[in-house]
Length: 356
Ligand code: GDP
Image (cartoon, rainbow, N blue to C red; front, top):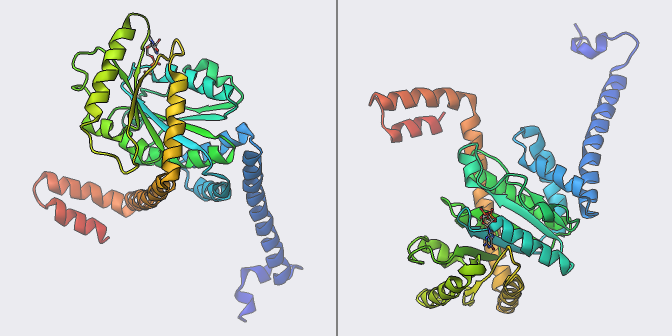
């Protein structure tokens, strides 16, 4: 048998190998071009502020299908040069503090100023259980209808880290689509505020007045992260208590060390329902931007955040690749059983699995 006869291609009657291979590569090229046209068109549409394209891209970014990862990355890369020109605001507070009401009023105020506002959510509960504290779609019904607003309910995922990475990428896509104010909402549960803090420029904590000892109920860490504290629901019979709480918080904040940003966190009172004090909060944010721009903190912080997200992404990806390997899956089960019967130690088991 000659070398040529070994090839399955040469057995086809009347068609030369080169003809078939070239046909094959043309098909491949066509498929490749089709895929890249899809990506390029999507990027172009996002840049033209097409909301449907933006939603599709976020869905791709959120997809767990490995086939979508490449496309999602290509879209992110295409959008990156057009991103970064926004102010990113994190908003946190316990369930019921009035976050969605506040964001709706605040969002409407911003669009009335000609801003384009995107609202994304990080909901730790959606990654741990299937339930969601934040993500029901009936929230912010008025803002949803505003053509200068884009609201995306929280991404779902297996881990807070995974959900956060998707949100981080969604920020890039929203910025490329011309949104100049990005609001990231979260609840004060678990590590979610820390996660949100690591992707925003300005961090706003919503609080309620009058709920007993003002300073007892909040984790010290959150106060330290806050660039502003807004005592919400400062309306009706609550107004007086809110004013008092404002004084108390202002006094308490003086005991905290000065921030690297050189910014002294502000305390204010507001009412999402009655649209009171909302403009003051925007003024505080603009003042923050001015201060941190002039001392270069604004960009330095974004750079630090980018480095942080690089390491986070690598960790996430390595972890997911490791745990998804079929032999690791099988062996992990066995090692867990061995641990249960005291036949190995966690360290020996980990060493064994990592060396597979
Ligand atoms: P979230 O869970 O933090 O998103 O809070 P919501 O925005 O869903 O509000 C929780 C409850 O507080 C709802 O019944 C709202 O009507 C009420 N609420 C929200 N904002 C205000 C406010 O500014 N003043 C008053 N009095 N009630 C408010």
